Amino acid sequence: MKYVYLICLFVSMPVFGQKIIPFIDFNEFFRTFENGAFRQIEFQRIENFKAGDGAIGYYDNRGNLIIYDGKEKKQVANINAEYTVSDHLITWRIGETLNLWDNGKLQTLTYRSENVATMDSLVVYQDNRYNTLNAYWNDQIYPITQMSGTLLWPANIGENVFAYRDNGDFYRVFWNGEIYDIDVWVGSIDFSCGTDIISFNDPTMRTFAVFDKGELVDVEPQFVNSHKAGRGFVVYEDRNGNLIKYQDGVKTTLSNFGASFWEVKDDIVIWFENNFLYSQVGDKKIQVCNFKPEDYKLKNDVLVYRNIMKGVDAVVDGKVVNLTNQMDATYEIYGSSVIVGLFNNSYKVYWKGREYTP
Image (cartoon, rainbow, N blue to C red; front, side, top):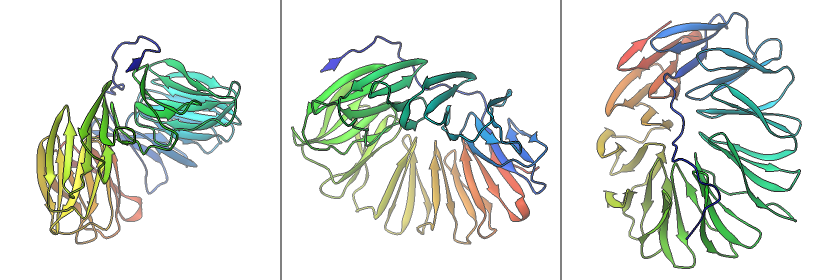
């Protein structure tokens, strides 16, 4: 059952034409790699930076908070502030004042903020002026719920969707500018929120259910052991230990051998079974390696991991690529590119099938 809060266009998260890959070089200059070329952003040492796929926030040596999006640098504060950078949004707090950068536009969301979650295309925040839970999405502010007592903060917030409990113990979902009813339950529910999708064990129907682009679907007739949501899909382990992917109404078995670990992030799922690591993006499954990596990162459709030589390998565009065998090299993912940190603050970037060095 759906309660329509406001009629909005069906809009996905914003798309940026290029990704910005930041790093600090051996001269302590702040630089980026953009669209196949290196750029110098600052000629003096910066204090710190945080970056998503589409923008960077950083403090320069004068204590100014600056946002750079590949087109311009914009100073947004000249005092110390808490700031958070997602792939498409940047928020910062000066005292209790919560400010937002969204694709070059600046605005103040509230002057009395408390809890804040900044996601790819969604900001969820507590407004203490009215004791409300609010959501910013698609250039609009939505009052979600108001309470006279303690405000209940959502336990799990996705990139453009989240579930919450109001003061009547009614669970609801906010997605694409609308509010959808889930059910009444006095206890907690373990939601996993991704992009356009939420999974949970339904305590009233005793089923494993999915909120999928505005529709509630019973995927399994009983609870599952664990579940994680990605971009438009859910992966779960059923009662028999099978690892299953649900997407667009279709269930696909990934493993029926009992994966010893598995993870979901954005467009990619990985799992380890019978001493092999596998990854899958869309319907393309590949065997990655025959060992369990000591460390790894997932983002978008990319896996980067510590190889057997203690260097760095990656899975990009469905192919395993050796980036370096230098021990303890660092790595980060931006878009579908990877930056690797080597000795003496030197770097290499893997972008569109080629390696680039400054």
